[in-house]
Length: 64
Image (cartoon, rainbow, N blue to C red; front, side, top):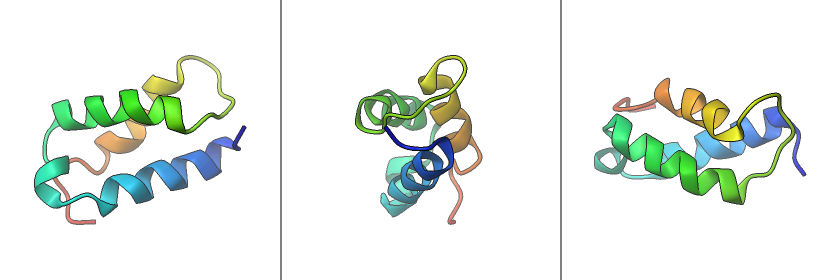
């Protein structure tokens, strides 16, 4: 089980490593978040999917 901050860093790093065209839409972020929820286990209040989705939304369609 990862710390939440470590999970956030890993998820965002993996998201930003994708080609820009693969991370341009909210739908792509939602699909990525569903998959990431299974790969990155961390403790949080609420649904980990919601946390991951929030982290990704800051970066949807951005270069960095």
